[in-house]
Length: 324
Ligand code: SD4
Image 1 (tube, rainbow, N blue to C red):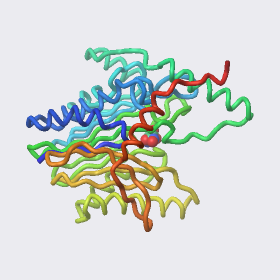
Image 2: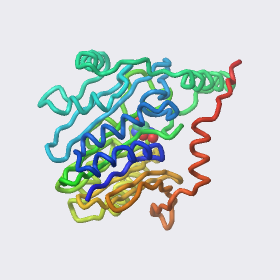
Image 3: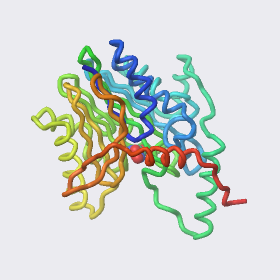
């Protein structure tokens, strides 16, 4: 049995590609790296890798992480520029006992030293988004809030291979217009991802500042350890974090999570409408699902052909320059 789950529709092609590795008995880490690299390289996903939206200084700063649930190897990089595949740096760093989490120029120097490809990650499309945003803010004389899910955010992938190894990986450009140097949950162990091969794995997307307050991925894996199914574990983690944040702060950002257990069963939960995800396993073809809320719980259904068409059309539509 092997299985893979990823956040958002954008995980589809990467998962299909990586599933070939798992199908041939390959290693979970290679499958996660290859899925995420595909997504990082696709220029029309504006929240991961090449084409990701920039920070407030028009610099693309990326975060990524990798955790191996069999060895507890963990590696991450944060606020890195010009590294084509941040997931490959995260995975390379996971092999060491120290220096596992590098940020900024130190991370970039190390990536180039080990021969990772360096490229300018700011695309013309991302520049247009940035300039449009400044134009809109100038028009209204008001700064817009920093929000996740502008362009469908972080990719988080959890996978199980046929040797019963579980791992998780994340990659993101974080929040559009964030401050230079800002880190979200995605590269933070226990928040953006967590994996333990004897239990399962989880990964998150949403408002990093709030997801971190619940160490949500660790919480989900612990929920599974305590006997919950992946679905119950995800639902419980999202609902309790939302409840506690509303109680303490009177507000709660977007929280969406996916998980698998050691038998390849999956779970998903969110506090928004329309979160999408992709699941594939040795006995389940790759499918995109879209969530909705019913009786206070997250449910999901397979994405319709129309939904799938609209999704790609929106991502690839020509952009109008408001500022010209
Ligand atoms: C962050 N959690 O940097 C990421 C962004 C994200 O949907 O997933 N947004 O806070």
